[in-house]
View 1: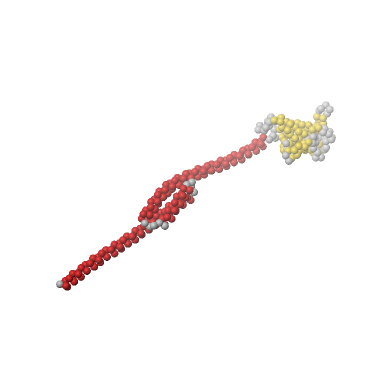
View 2: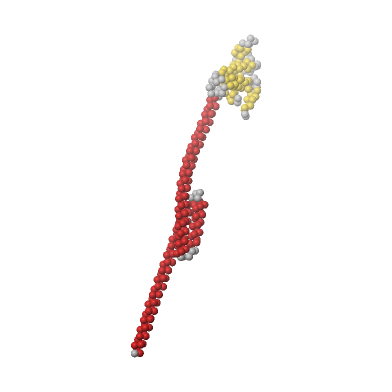
Length: 294
């Protein structure tokens, strides 16, 4: 009887131990399962955190590239990029739990949406700037062409002005000088003897010129004898840096038609030899000739 009681107690103990063993196994399994779940959660959160950091880095890179374009939106782009950098700093030091990670994900999404909106504006500005640059280049080309054309016109006008100025100058031709003996009756007798001459007659012609300026025209006539003396008035006049000693002047009323000019230069004791006659329009020599007396 006593043996049966012992057996019953032993069975009870065995059953209790078995129950405790099963309970322990179940608890250990639960702990292991929870640990694995926690490890999986931590790993997932860490991976997602790295993904968010990577996405934020891409946002920053996009802003850096847009800022380098140096558009009128640079200040706004810099401000948004600084927000991204700040969020990255906060995320790196944040707790690795789902709640905080969700907050950072939401902030990233908002920043991504803002970035896309700004990039659209940047693209519009770039296209407008390209269009303005193209128009500016076209305008510059047109202005350069106009400048070159104007330079050509100026050159042509200068050449034309020179041509007109040259063409408008009067031409003096047929310059002839001869010596005469004047009788008491006033009759003039040509002579080539110096001893007989008491007057020189200078003749020349002003040619017709339709584009010349009409009006009174003064010429300075210089007669130089064989001893290099200037005959007549021996007056001196300056034209700029040039001075001229002349024998007499003659003023002609010019009306764009041919004019014959004849002037007399009285004198006495004319020297033998060759004489030189020069006609000046102000300081410019326009005609010359020579003659001799024996």
